[in-house]
Each structure stands twice: as C-alpha cells, then as structure tokens.
Length: 256
Length: 182
Image (cartoon, rainbow over the protein chains, first blue to last red):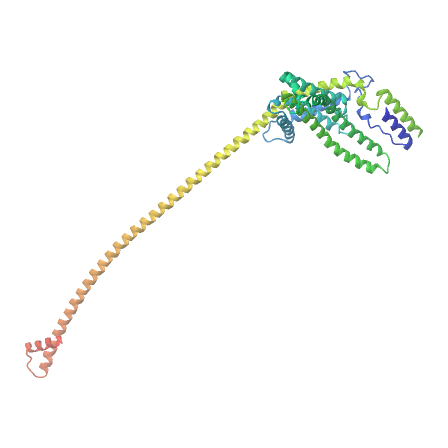
C-alpha cells in the first residue's frame, strides 16, 4: 500500500510517471473471478506447469535418445546432473547421494522458475515467500528429521561444541540453536528477496523510460540489470542448493 | 493531468481492493493457493526426476564412461599389437638381411671357386699349348738347321765343283758342320 501511494503521488507530481513495480507479483486467477481459493488455477499454476514442462523437456525429452555423443539438450541435462551430483557427493559424502533426487528437484525447480521469471510479462514463482518458505521449511524439516532418525539424541551434539572450553559451551549452544532455527528464514528470504528486488528495480527503470530524456539511460540500465539478473537467477539457485547440501551434511554427520 | 490523477486514484483503489498491502508477497490470501500448487509441482518434478530422468541420465553417463574405458583398453591393446607387429617386422627384416648376406657370400665363394677352377684350367691349357708350341718351334728350328745344313752342303759341294775341284763329300760335310757350330 505504501509503494502504491507514493507511486501515485509521484505520478501526480511529475505528470506521466506511474510506478507499479510490485504489480508483476500479484497472484491472479487465470479464468477471471476475484476470490483465490486453494484450488483456483492462477498464474502461479500456469507458471508452475510451464516449469514442469521445461524440466520435463530438458531432462526427459533431452535425454530420450540416450546418445553416447550427446546433443545440445542432452549435454545441458548431463551438465545439470553432473553439477548437482558432484555437489551432493562432495559436500554430503557418498551416503548423501540418496538425497540426490530431492536436491536435484529443488535445484531444477528454483533455477527453472528463476529463469522463467526473466521472460518479460512472466510471473516469478520464486519471488514469493509462500514458495520459498515452503522450500526452506522442507529442507529444515528434512534435515531435522533425518538427523534425529539417523543419530537419535546424538544429533543434539550439533549444538554442543565439544572442541570449545566447557564454560563457553552453554553459550555456544544457545547461539548454535538460534542459528539453527534462523536457517530456514535466511534460506527463504535470501532467494525471494534477491529475485523480488531485481525484478522490481527493472520495473522502476522501465517506469522512467516514459520520460524522453531519460529513456536511453533507462533502457541501458534495464539491459544491465537484466544481465545481472541472469547471473542472480543462477547464483541464487546455486546458493539455495549448496546450503541445502551443507544442512544435509549436518544431519548426516553432525559432529563438528 | 486530471485523468492521470484519476487513474492513480483508481490504481490505489484497485491495490487496496486486491492486496490490501503494497507487497503481493505478503498477501496471505494467496498463500494456500501457492502452497497447494507448489506441492503438486514439487511432487510431479520429484516423480519425473527420480523415476525417469535421473536414472536415465545416470545410465547414459555410466554407459559413456564404460564405452570410453573400453575404447581406451582396445586402443591400448591395438597399440601393443602394433608394437609387436613392428618388432616381428624388424626381426623378419634382419633375418632377411642376414640371409641375403649369407647367400651373397655363398654365391661369391662359389663364383670364386669356379673362377679359380677356370683360371687353373686355362693356365694348364695355356701351359700345355706353350709346351706344344715350344716343342713345335724346337722341331721347326731343328728342321730348319738340318735343311740349312743340307742346303749349305749342297751349295758348298756345287761351289767346290764349280771351282773345278772334285768335291769330297765327307770333307764338305765336315767343313759345313764345323762352320755351323761356330
């Protein structure tokens, strides 16, 4: 509401500049209507379906020929597979590989949603806290449950830093406990915040393009931001995935 | 200006109606919808990846590694065979060379023997011929001396007769023979 109000005031002052940087994130029903029930097909549904199709096309259709000498699509699919497989193996160890499909699912969903969000007029799934918080909570719950199932109460040793002096340990335990519970928050807000900010900044620059004098600068700025956003789209998916692996390693090998 | 203000006001009204807040991310009425569709999406992606895509790609990569390993092994094998073949070739070449030298030496020795034989035969023939010739020459020489003696005797006898003397055959012969020795 605050941004809408300032935007409107600004429009009134400069006569023509109208900023709606956040409108791109509004969830709308696909087939009209105002109410959004949990089952209503919305633009979220549409872009999730597109994400599924893209992932299916890349990883399933791309590898359907099973060529020893790969086509371009198959190369990309193999690269994605090798990238995440190596990441899981390097960070979590061999026993972490049973989580590989899970980590791969997260990575493919996030990276696809991030890049789809860069298509003009599209909807950025991963800019919504509803999505990223669920993803982060999934990781958090998985790590916690796997930790307790595999190690029982020994998993609590994660918070008891045995290498520190005895007097410091309770203090460290409190800090470790807090940082453990802050993980899903930072994990989710980092992803959504980065994407939302970048897309909003592009929209703001786009708003300035209405002024004849500023528009060349504006177009240049949008181009530059777009390049940066391409990088951010990949890096944020990478960061989310690698943190997932690091947290999983805590669950599999809780000793410091 | 008036219309734009009106638009802005309408936008404000719209924003207030749809979101109630500036950030659609914090519009909690859309949360159940997003979470439901996210869950569906994640389940679908997970099933597609874990059932189809990942085993297939893993299989392709393993197959490729296997193929490359096999190819490398085959290449190593062929290389060893090539080295072996080269060794065999070199060996055969050396043998052939030695054989050729042996045959050449043999041939040379044979030819030399033949040659020596022929030379010896030729020498023998020549010596024989020489001896024969010498004998013939000696004969001829002897014959010639005899003839000369006869002619000399006859001539002497004639000359003596022509001079008006009675030619004593014995004395003529003795004189001629005597002269011929000197």
